[in-house]
Image 1: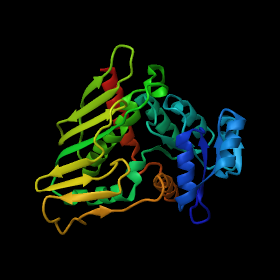
Image 2 (image 1 turned 120 degrees about the vertical axis):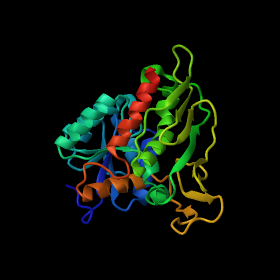
Image 3 (image 1 turned 30 degrees about the vertical axis):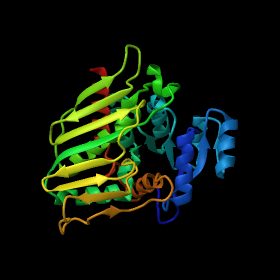
Image 4 (image 1 turned 135 degrees about the vertical axis):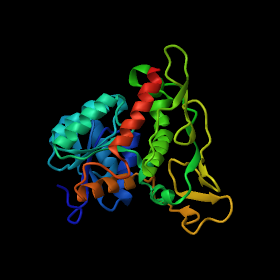
Length: 325
């Protein structure tokens, strides 16, 4: 079991793409309780290049070698999402704790099986939903129950992407919902979870032609409060998000999925509310999910209070069901 009081949690990364590089830079540059010590790719040369560029002591030319490494306590899975389930299972069977990039998997049944395996082996498995680990988002969630109930949430994530590659490949579970729809759905689910509110499935509208991935997706909830959520891989969408209730409104400014400034609108803030929340982060902010993961292990948790496995399951179910419908 990792003991944060002795040394940082030692991560290895499975997958040597752009997201892996960002995670490594953020963690090794800014984390307090975690460090990346190893990289694994399917090609030894690619792993060596990554390790050389980012100053890592260990580079493995296969995921099997990473799973067997005594230098690694936890694995950050950063391959393309159709490969997540098999790789997470491999690492859990090898006794590694796993932080898996979003979407964790693309089938609820796979998530259920992996969570059961992790619990049976006393291992921590979490989805790397970094937005929930940012200090500003945690401050929002901590104070939210003090306000009157919310009535409306508006959030979207969309950008114009070149129409090539995995995002536009149905065989690789491409499309807006799996790529960026996960973020606003996670926000809605986390708010409901924090407030102890049940949340039925959304009405889902997809923009796609036969044989195409969904280029855009909208998710509408009427209960337990109104939520209008959007996702797109062909259009730039509004970057700010807002949450409002009777007599109050909060705006998550900038890129709301990297929350650092949450502004109070609509008159003086109540005494119970900290007015504007301004908690900037260094780098890309991925160090916060790594530190939270390490904190969970230090407290011997097999689930997270901020990134619960049940919320991952709920979001996966909404997307899987919406795409099938």
